[in-house]
Length: 240
Image (cartoon, rainbow, N blue to C red; front, side, top):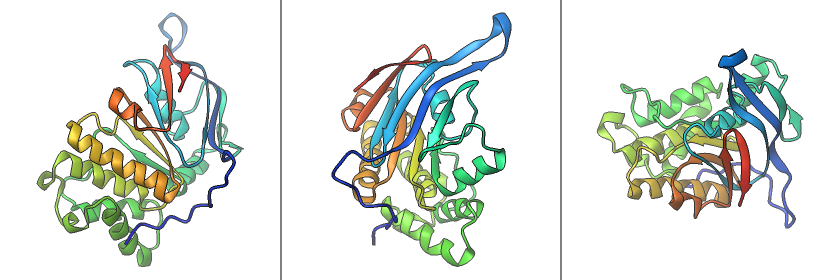
């Protein structure tokens, strides 16, 4: 059984942007000690695409990802999600956005060590406010989609790095987000496991219509994605 995400059908023409950043600046600190993590970054990402943000450490890609995921606010500029300016939204509104429309994947996997794969995914659904009557099916479907239904009773220490990352993906997609954000999702994996994770991402985009934005240093991944934005010193300097 595939995880059936209720997404709008794709049109022949270029789809509308799901998320946009306009003139995003992020400054930490003040005065001579200020650090400018982003300096007027602009991007527009259409629905149903697999997109990479690339750049050296300190280029601003993770800061930009945090802005797109409403985990942080820009010092200047605006973020638009499905045409709505979310920059000035309250914390409650931003939390609701993450619970319903966004999926987040972190480099460290961030799994609860004493919980099984199923319990980690089901716990994420609880946080997202999914009714108890729907959580079991949603968790099992998500784990089946990433190829882990047979391993769903295993705890993180009983799983490989690739299986742990796929569990993290299952947790992030179980509530059916329209946008998935992943920070260096293959950085801690070997090339074989990294390709397994990227296959899951391609399936989500091509088969389910999800939009995925990830950060990466890996040239092999940049060959797989639909679009690449290169960052340097807090600016987007190239789009491929």
